[in-house]
Image 1 (cartoon, rainbow, N blue to C red):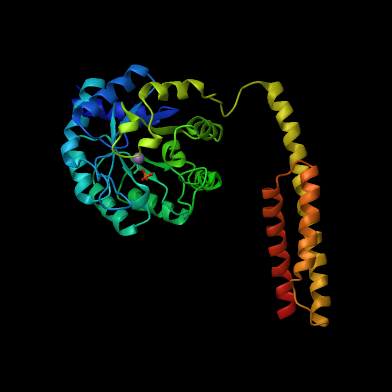
Image 2: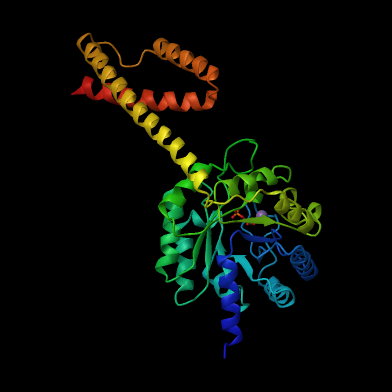
Length: 362
Ligand code: PEP
Ligand code: MN
């Protein structure tokens, strides 16, 4: 006979392995009624696999709501009992891990402000030794993939088998469209480095506002994320934390309904034949581009030699401005964004400068 603990573990594993995995719930647990009502309304949508709620809230400044604390854990236990939803909570210290596990929290997550601190991550990892619980690790607030990967390694080395990633964007100075810059390429790079780990997107903390949640969630799904964590609240405007980005369970259901769920692949042979042909063309063009860039660098080296023999500096600002302007104009006629042209030309220019620098100083 299966014990109730085993039944619960297989329910958690089923949720963990579901695609897309949808996690929702309030930024913070505030009152028992709020937690229970949110969980019940989320269950009613039939679209949510796991209930989240912050119990301990690491806040940027003191005096803000720092979470209800361990007192909120029985509310989550009760919410699970009523709805059957597995629960997930953020942990930042060994004590918090112990408390969360005492109250049967099913999945733990490491927050962005904790991932940056190897001492804290190690403390959480040490508290997890010998425990069988899945752990999600948010990206650090700064765009440092080594830290993110380091946190994964610490938790894995503690013996945790189910480890996943949450992409919640990166801090940026000043006002931007997003509360946290998504820097999608960094999440994609983590997927490349650790393809065996599921990666969930957290549009709530990326956007920091409601009106762009839909497009951000869609982008994540288009980039093949394994799921979404979106904050929801029964009365978003009056939430005790992150009020601007929270939505009701019903609005969450609408957002999920509006997402176009794309597949990684389809079995159609005509689709594959067409795709193969186009990919072949792309491969040819990439090959030619590399050849051309190689040739460009060889010419840059020759220029370097002339400059060296005539004692001329590597960088001539006026010449660089001229090249950049030409490239931007040409690029815009071809439908290339100014941002892309700038990034591309900067990269080419840096490589050129490095090659010339070597020649000048050899
Ligand atoms: C949260 O999920 O409520 C939270 C605090 O997120 P983050 O660690 O991404 O800031
Ligand atoms: Mn939040």
